[in-house]
Amino acid sequence: MNQARIWLVVKPTVGLPLFLGTVLFIALCVHYAILSHTTWYPDYWQGGAKKHTAAVVAPASPMVASNQ
Image (tube, rainbow, N blue to C red):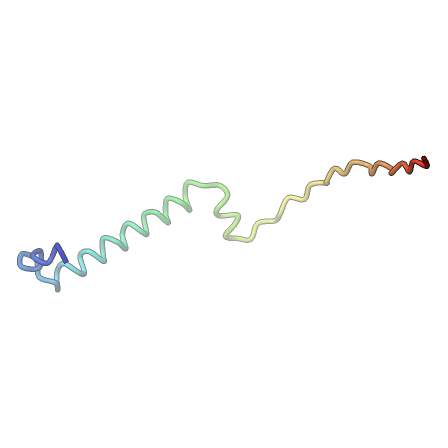
């Protein structure tokens, strides 16, 4: 571990909770940004109704059998 000396400066009982708290804070900020700045995510979360569109189907072309 190339960062082992950091624990000589910062105690693990302070450093680890601080690190994990920072990760938690960043994760909550990202989730808040997604929930508040998108229009599709709240609909997805609520199970929004699907938009039904009529499928345009081309008529099947009849197969021409050639009797040669």
